[in-house]
Length: 347
Ligand SMILES: [Zn+2]
Ligand SMILES: [Zn+2]
Ligand SMILES: [Zn+2]
Image (cartoon, rainbow, N blue to C red; front, side, top):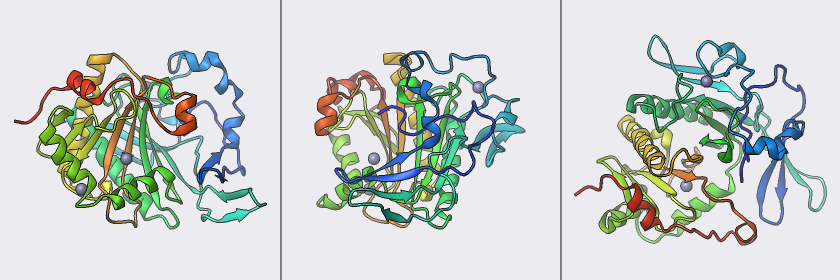
């Protein structure tokens, strides 16, 4: 669903003080929901008109992420520079979905009213100083810096008492949930292991034999026709089980559960592979919205898991059947998607 994670950093000068977001348990599914009071204050967010216009049609305000406007966002937590000026910036999100060091304490307020405090960290990662350069247009070195920033922040989150898992994402385009045009990602450190991660961990545990994704890399290499890009450190496929058109999975060849423990050359290679594959996507389909989702094991979980990155282009909308059953209907076979995207399959 679009906009699950609030994605806005600008547009407000003072922060609502003592109000805290709440986690509520959906007893039907076992999923936690974040109820964000601040977001509800902005009913315009639901207006059809706003959802249908391009990202940041309001040009009356200067872009908070462009060089020179650094004052309009909170002070940077971290900056990376290739030379002199900043190349990548990490700043706190002004509308955090998770905030503060409240421990994860579950409270039962009735037989079906289970809630918890939503402590945690919510940061924005500005991918480059250039307003027009998304991950598909930045240089390999810039992509490497972004990956280094993601690694460093997750490392930092993992040292915060009470936090268990970090989610790094990039939403590009309004349909994918971006509300600011300047290419950026988000980093969330949270105090529980979310359902999607737990389900993937269960998938790894169920898989008979060695690692599920190491096996996938070998099997897809043999099959060949779903490999979109491959080099000596990374493989990108349109997975056999793709649920959405042109979905891609970026798998580092070096096995390891944690992104933040990956070797620098592997991080660099994943950043470059993302750059190449997002550029392929643009070449073939135009400027489509997409979500990039980084999956790494919870800090203190170890095996079995193999960190990876999902690319989910936003080409279709999930409707009633998908919502009702969780069964996705993919109208483009991954074999066909890969064929269209394919550039380099190793000999
Ligand atoms: Zn900008
Ligand atoms: Zn593996
Ligand atoms: Zn995953």
